[in-house]
Image (cartoon, rainbow, N blue to C red; front, side):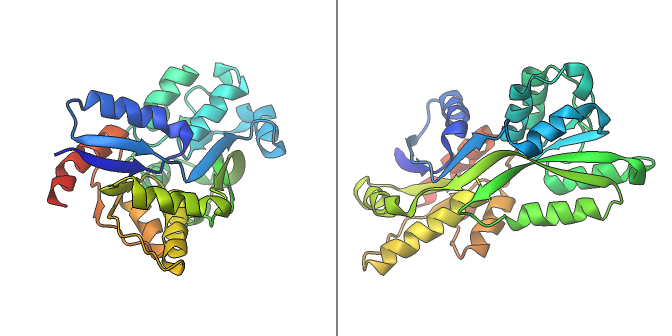
Length: 263
């Protein structure tokens, strides 16, 4: 039976989700896309331009997401300035090679933020390294605890850490909450799929808005990995299921296909 799934990922991630869905064909999922957050590059922001001006001075450059890789790609930096320095998580390593044309640093690190921290701890003279962390600037959203814990753990390594804001993640305007609740009620949605903590936070607000109007929405929520689930729980959003594999969207699609028939 075909299940109608509402994906809440930002527009910048939808092509990758559609590609994963196409690869899974024949697929029992009928996807509807309604982004709850918007992402945009900050390549002209002072934080990022300052980083670009001295990129060669950093020993390591950590990309916290694919958007950080995209920011590097848009920067026009010479490959020689960043070759062998860029650290990325899981499948984002492929984007580093394809978009930047450089060698990935720490390719064998466990594919998570904390996995990067553990890999760094194995480096000699870590306290003498200068590390740039490319991060999102949040608008209308709390900073996810996963990022806070990651940055705290990095600071404890003794390395010199520079926070570089290279893209913005903004919440959906509250004026659109009613539109979203109407979609959830009228589009015969079988499940909602969230791919980030920001989406989970906005979804929790939308569901609270619906309940405050006297028309609560009851749709199961599925999460792309434990980090997203952690953020959802902090926002008091109940998660029905969590994809145990979360290194690429194909993992999420495969999980949803198996999990949803149990609805």
